[in-house]
Image (cartoon, rainbow, N blue to C red; front, side, top):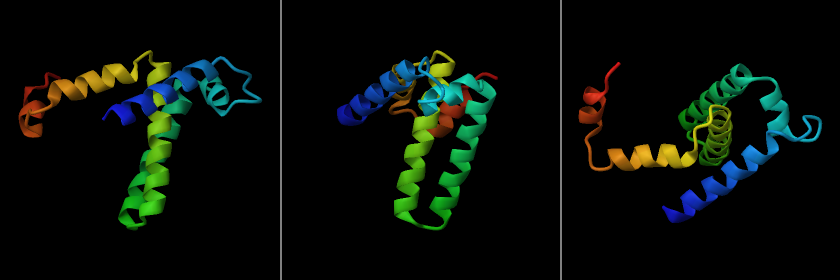
Length: 108
């Protein structure tokens, strides 16, 4: 878990730093300049591509699409000022709790 957390934390820092870069030289800055709606749209596209790769049972494609999905999720989180530490803390809080119990306890 520490390796994954370190990798995500490093990637998060890179994304946050590049959001203010020149959009002509940085994909992150270019997408950020287009706004949260575009970032969310791109995340949705990557989620769809991940599902398609899973359904085709192509592990290599799935791995690559999942990486794209995580990258774009981190970009959206950064745009919303939510850290990966916040997300990991939420997952940690759910550890040991049945998914059905956790879902039933949510307030809408």
